[in-house]
Length: 211
Image (cartoon, rainbow, N blue to C red; front, side, top):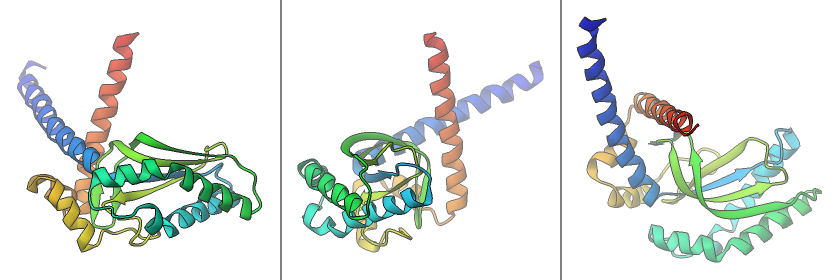
């Protein structure tokens, strides 16, 4: 066991430094990315279809709601100022489709897993998000990036266009930008997944220590 100890120590130190770097990337992205999160009432096909209809109506009205989304501060302000309007859109869509589900619209921090959006990969972490919860909100959820404007390019097959990528590039360091836009998405997704597992492990340790 002793002969392996140096390798174990080196491994732990390496994981620590990699985790610290990814923490920095996640923090920078969390400060500069705004996400949309729509949660269905249940996993029934009818509820999942309704979720997508609510999503489509919100995105269809995006130009009126999210005027002049030139920076993240403005984007967040627009969301806060239009929560009632977004809730009204969701309620009307639900009613028009023959349902009487309640709907809750909120804005704040939400936890997200690692996610690939076409040409970018976002690490797991806590992001500011516009959350739309339909009914019991126990079904599969749908999410995308509202700022930079990924949702509004193509909701079904999201991929950042050049303008959205430029906004992201202007707000991140060169290393951070290159990391999440790495052409080898499979490789970077694996790295982020390992980071996600590391973070989950740290959270479990914290919970155990509190007991």
